[in-house]
Every structure is written in C-alpha cells, then in structure tokens.
Image (tube, rainbow over all chains, first blue to last red; front, side):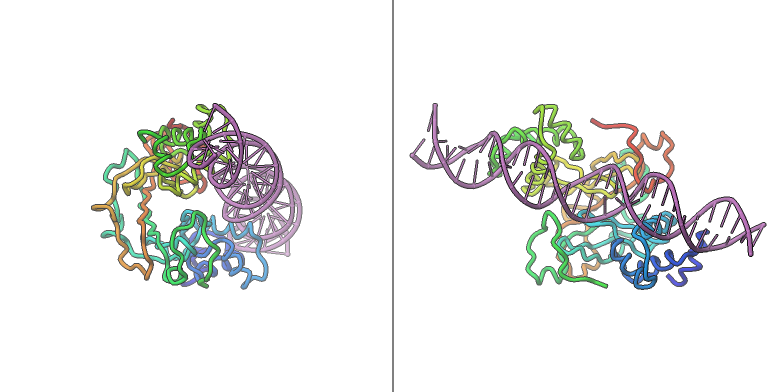
Length: 154
Length: 154
DNA sequence: ATCCCGATTTTGATAAAGTCCAAATCTGGA
DNA sequence: TCCAGATTTGGACTTTATCAAAATCGGGAT
C-alpha cells in the first residue's frame, strides 16, 4: 500500500482519519484480526470505536482494497495483499497465518471437476498444520477449540 | 452410514437415543447446520436439547465419525462422508453446499509450494460461487452478509 | 435381573464476534 | 463558509457456540 490517501480517493471514498489508521494497521500487521487492528489503529489515532473499525474494514473489503480471510475457529483476518490469488497456511494451535503462492498454475489456479451448475468465482485454499513454534512447544494434535496463543506476530 | 449403532460401539461410545438421532439426521441431511440437525433429530426423538446436539456433534467429530466444515459467513455444517478428502462448492448467496472430488490427483491432493516450516496435515479447498437457483433468481454479486435462503434442500 | 458408577443429557448462564440503529460529527463540493 | 450526505460513535442486540452444575441414563459387575 504505497499511498493510503490516494488509494481511498481512487475508490471515491472520503478520506477520514479512521480509514487511514485502519489501512495503516492492516498494512503493518498482515492477517491481523479486527481486535488487533483496533489496537494498531488506536496507536495512531488515540481513539477509534470498535464499530468504526468494523465499518471501515467492511467498506475496504467491499471495494477490494483489502481482503478478508475467515479460517475456521478464528475471527476474520485481513490483509493488504490483493489482486493475486495466493492462499494461506494456518496453524491449528495458535492461528499463525502465512501466505503461500498459488497451488497449481496460474490465476484461476484450481477448477472443480464437477461444478454442479454453479458459477464459480474463487477457489479458496487453506493449508492446515502446526507452525514451527507450536511444534517445538509440543502441541501434538489439533484442539477442538484453539489454544490461547503462546506467541504473537506483530 | 450403514449401522449407526454398531458405528458407535466400534468407537467405544455408549449408545444413546440422542446419538442415534443426530447421526441419522446428519446422514439424511448432508451439510446441515446444527439447527437443521436439531430439527431432524427432533423429528425422530420428539425432544432433544440444543446442548445435546452440540455435545453429540462434537464427540462424533472428534472420533472422526462425521466431519465438520466451517465456510465463511455460515454456521458449521456436518457430513457423513469421511475418510476421503473431497472438497466443497458453496453458494455465496444461499449457502447451498455440494461435494466435489479432490482437485488434483490423489489423497494429499495439494501441496504448498513453501511450507514455512509448518507440519501440514490437510489442504482444505472451498469453491465459491452461485448455485443454479440463485443465478436464476438474479442474485448478481456476493453479499457481504448472506441473504436469507430462498430455497431449502431437505 | 438389579445395582451402581461414570458418562451423558438437560437447563440456564455466559462468551465471542459482529451487526443494527439512531444521534452526533465530519468531509468535501458549491 | 455552508450544507447535504456520508461517517463515526455508543449502546443494544443477534447468532453461534461453550461452560457449569444438577438430573438422568447406559451398561458392566454382581
């Protein structure tokens, strides 16, 4: 995200301090949750309501300025990197999320063998596993409900 | 699911009316939500608590007797079909879900190009699109939040 | 066939994530 | 500078699911 302000103008969105702060937080904390983004935005603004963070994230997502990912057993996460169709690698224990490049070939990347008449617009891929840190910590199996994170990635 | 009762015994689970009813409902309503399964189970039992449905679904999922899928913007759904690694096709508008066979080759089916040191145990694929019925109904874009279903598949 | 312990079910409270609504405030064009 | 419409805010509310404690049930031992 080179210039958040002109990005907003390009999309005909009024420029507000809240939008700039959320956009900054998303850029600097890839795969952060709404709560984490709120913390990041408050570090810049001093104050922003929880509802505004959701409002901004929804507008930016609708405009395609950011991308929302919603892995199972996790609140939604947001990222800056849009326009390609990369996928994600998610730790079952702590939720750490990494980008991985497209699984197979070019942009459409995957095709269903039988589309059942659906008009498919996206193939979403999530690789599930254990991150190096959770492997070392001896977490052996996927918990039914996620463990409290034992490390953070800010 | 040939014989729900012996399936339970094979997994050393006491046989209860609630478990049989939930298992039956899952078998007969593939990709149903907990609420839909509750309705199905009550059709057999007359009464079952919401908590028991969750209890049973959790036990069955933990034992690998059923599989839980958790698409974005949808409550969890459950299915009978386990042991293969098929994927899913989900309608953005109404949530209708279909099985699709594995995207690429055999069982592992997909490999991340860079595993970032993760120990990967599953590649989950969801194809997103519009089902034939929603296409006909003129739903044009993916709603931020799902529309109320305009058809059901029981 | 009956008893009993531990597992299961039930009821009700609670949690997490996010949305809805109306009032107050701000943005940006005129 | 002013104003209409968009944005932000605070609070209530919804949905999905879990937690906890009390009541009940299943099934092996007697």
